[in-house]
Image 1: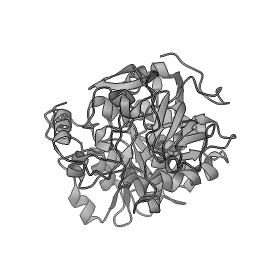
Image 2 (image 1 turned 45 degrees about the vertical axis):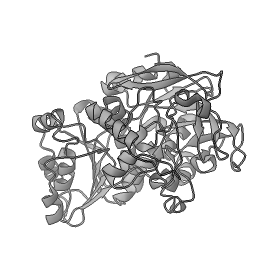
Image 3 (image 1 turned 120 degrees about the vertical axis):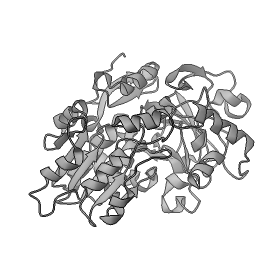
Length: 447
């Protein structure tokens, strides 16, 4: 919390570039600019470290000619939301509305919006991209130059990322989608129409997780015959298993605790499992692959996160602020890969500094280490929709969606995910604007 407070102070005393697009993480915070007076809506807000809750906010209004107001028909919680929940990501303000994955029905459009209209069913990218800058013209939307005003992120990471919905003022302070209505800037750029044949239960996840996991697998060049290791079996890890299967991987070895391994095995019986709490991961991978032409992995996918330390040493280092992120999963990925040909693809969230990173192993053995960054949603979402969702080749309901809940239970969903209660991996959150549940959707649950 001290780091969060310091970051907020730093942001206030530094100067934003006036050309950047500004936002408010909660319309109620500046009602004159961002909200429709006399209106209310329910929203999930960050109230402090390990504390979120439902609040009454104000409905957003059109601010710019390129804006779209969206009635939320589908939203969800993400494993990366837990990093905000824990206070691992700085520049959180009390009352910020969270949620970066959402879809819905267009309610209002600004005068400059041409490609979507009221009534359209759409999914939103978790990134706010301008569509015109150097990166956006290449569909590398996560690096948009014009939607994030944070001077702190510029200082920490050398440059800003794109703005992101519901993901702190470090990424622009945009209001999130765990609510009933949201303002989407540059609506023609950041909304993708969903065909009527695709229910929100399947189209929602184009917002982030489908693109993030696909990007991770593409960066690792997984192909026919690949031997792949996957660290972390949350929704991203499970999605990566499916993508690797679709790409023709020969063997998939997964690493997590017994609880998560059992879930993965129930969905993908062919995977080989390693419980990192009981086995030496690198040695076990080498033993499992010793009969191959060369031992080790062609690709190692890090889908865990830097805040989840394994050893007492790194748990202590994080507790006393000697590091923000553990290198343990990364080190295991590096040492488990084949020399020269091995690739480590990192989808996991790392936010700061680590100690004990085995850079020597990466260099001496020539392992290709690729940090995915925030996945460029715009590069992939049309392809995934057309080739995998519409065709049924990838069904999110079968791969990672475990629960269906109402918006008012969203705060409890954070606790369920954090504590791994009821085997919750990914939930579909419905609102008063949601359509009837589609075939295959989990039954509505009250938490």
